[in-house]
Image (tube, one colour):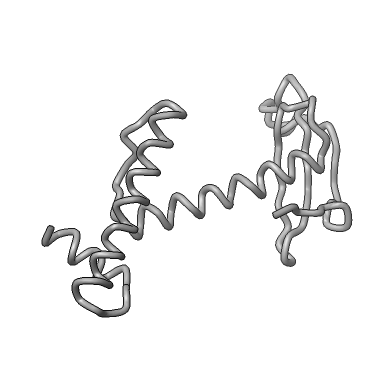
Length: 128
């Protein structure tokens, strides 16, 4: 899915964060990017000067898709935390979790002849 932000992109500037009056202003400037998706304004401050504002907005849009996936994965499969710390270990854990879930779905459908629900898959997982 490609997000086109040209019409939704409304702010791009190098800024210092904080205020001079309170003596808490940053020494180095950051890139401040403002963009709008579905009527919601998002503001991103980053030190990535090698990316355009549109690329930064795209990265954060994709990041929230990833966050949504993990929230759904953790909620549906009752995964409390990730065990793996490396890229490959993470892929193994995700693949194993999804494979286990799909096997439980197949088991539920074949052995019980009922529509598959996340609640039923959780019950079967506990029984097995």
